[in-house]
Amino acid sequence: MDISVVIPLYNEAESLPELEAWIRRVMEEHGFSYEILFIDDGSTDDSWEVIQRLREDNPAIRGVSFRRNYGKSPALNTGFARAQGDVVITMDADLQDSPDEIPELYRMIKEDGYDLVSGWKQKRYDPLSKTLPTKLFNATARRVSGIHNLHDFNCGLKAYRGKVVKRIEVYGDMHRYIPYLAKLAGFNRIGEKVVHHQARKYGKTKFGLDRFVNGYLDLATLWFTGKFGAKPMHFFGLLGSLMFFIGLVAVILVGAIKLWNLHHGNPYTLVTSSPYFYIALVTMILGTQLFLTGFLGELVVRNSTRRNEYEIETEL
Ligand code: UDP
Ligand code: MG
Image 1 (cartoon, rainbow, N blue to C red):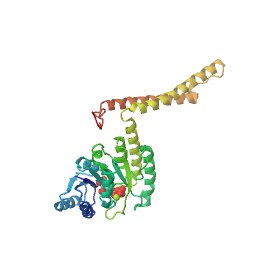
Image 2 (cartoon, rainbow, N blue to C red):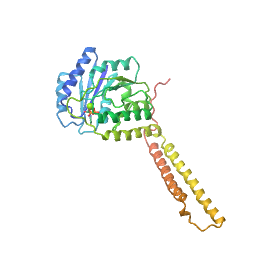
Image 3 (tube, helix red, strand yellow):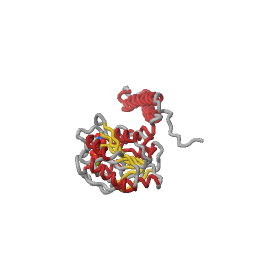
Image 4 (spheres, rainbow, N blue to C red):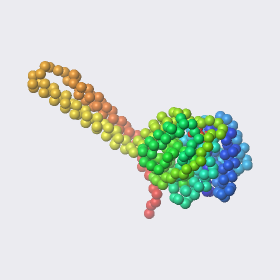
């Protein structure tokens, strides 16, 4: 099969018939063999009924319906697990992404050798309250992930080489960072294509402004797990050592000042009147905590069944 189109959706009943007809037209015009995987993320409208109806006319449609709303990432992950195409395309269900982009995305994966091609909504039809923070967000994501050529990490329209989606795990809200997940999994050929974007026609957006706060937290998590996931002590131990070092200097100062005063017969002062005493106290406690966190982290890693799971590319 050439293409799997994975579509996560939550209460998008009005958009689905148009979207399906459009995808079908593009696929038939280009003679692709394909499947459409609708992942109904616990919709409360009649999205699932619409999908069942559409399937009667188009056997290329497959569907999964969640019992409750889990989120876009779980929906994508479920679609990825089921996709059978050589190339997997993800798109939003709200008609903001255009199926006309599919043939070129397919070509870029097949002929240009990309592992992942991300859409770039260069001209966006979204409110300013969304586009402005997005710019900032993307700049941060570029820096942290080291994928410098992407302008739009969170674009719903993306294409993947089939094996890429089988080797990454999208969970929580990590759909914003799929290119980063792919890179951490060793897929470096990541490209971008400018795509047409449209204003939402039906329904309303499912994400509020909290997306940006959560987005940054998730980025921090990915950075940490990507770098130190298998060796947490290297992170906590470094910070802990730094704290202890500061504490050591402070302790020496406290002692030295005390001895100096005694030796020179200065008026009697308590060590607790020195600021260095408190610095030593705080940094020593923090340092201990950091080391203990590091040890706990190491115990967790040691018990992980995945600690020695590697993706082997070839073997002789
Ligand atoms: N979506 C989903 N589960 C959710 C929230 C959203 O499957 O919990 C789907 C939604 O139906 C749409 C896509 O994810 O197909 C993108 O959502 P939306 O259009 O609301 O995001 P925006 O375009 O505003 O970034
Ligand atoms: Mg949308």
